[in-house]
Length: 252
Image (cartoon, rainbow, N blue to C red; front, side):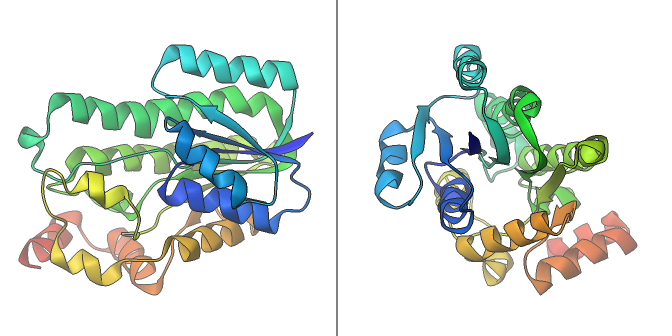
């Protein structure tokens, strides 16, 4: 059975990815949607024209990862698409972010992403696609968003390395690196501090980011960056010293 797996599917980019996979890929027989909030996952059943397997799991818990592993072992699926979209961030100076939240960002954004990828890899079909949700915050250190940006730099590096490793199997790994996206993410992120005003000018729609990510993945791109402004920012971080860019952002 050919399936897709989407983490963080209860909201934000994960929810949007589940919808677009259901609409665009006729060969997918089932989508496994994973998130902590089972009731939000069940809402998707009326919105997606593909059977869903509802998996209300907390991917930071060892027992829940074992449940996913058992499900994979029992069903022996062929996973055509894996979209790791679970994640969260907190905006505030590092010393003001509770240690629990800092550790939580590392656990969800890095450790859980690696764990799910590791568990699913034996079941990935030849020609399959893995989309790892990083962020444009991965391109440059982010004062006031330090731990989140660092976790996304990890995701970007890990994804690019994994893409090289999996080429012999015909599997493409794409790091999805959008700028700010208009989702519930900021309802959590801004509980400790406000997003810098200039970032609001670059806010993108989730459906457009997801569509671009899918196109870039199908084209075999290792990194997906939505929008001309973020593409320009990506280029600047490659050619200009980060210290200079950070000074410019401080002025903004």
